[in-house]
Length: 115
Length: 111
Image (cartoon, rainbow over all chains, first blue to last red; front, top):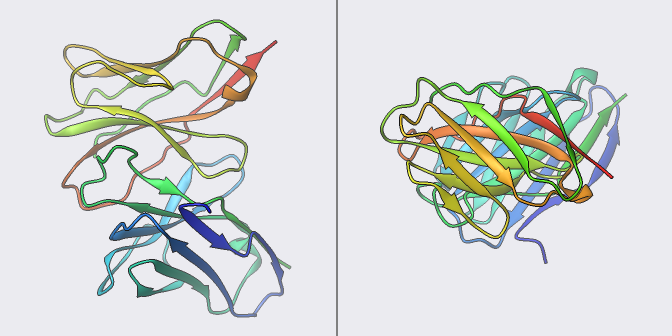
């Protein structure tokens, strides 16, 4: 099984619908992140969490919310999806310093299309 | 975190060494240089990181200049599967923030 699992892998939803993207990890890491990637662009940080009680906004948090249900689970929600939220979404984890042997570990991504 | 500058794209023949440069002239003493790569829409993959000494692992070598203002990622024998976007990221261990990805270098390995 993958260290960082994202579900669903692909999703098409309609404008105005609420949608949740889920992420779970078996790395035992405290820190979890949600990134968004648009075609031809790098990854941009949406939200990050350093532990269950700690949630922080990234550079593009508007229109998104998150929930850290447990150390291993971090969900991203779009309360009312809009077409410009069509993108590839990645979840990632890291250890305390981020300089562990493997640095950050990313999931395989969720491709979201809002029509 | 210090800003990095990378070429937009590079080509490399299969079997040859791929040398990917990165400039980080504003790097500070406690900032590490990380390299990640992303193979066509997959999740980014950690490659290597270093502080000031050169580093080598099973994937690549990282050469950091003595003044630490630039570095080079070396893939010693590039294969077609190394075609990807390579990101050079500079970050301190206590910055408290996630990795900041730029646009990276798109490396094309050709037969």
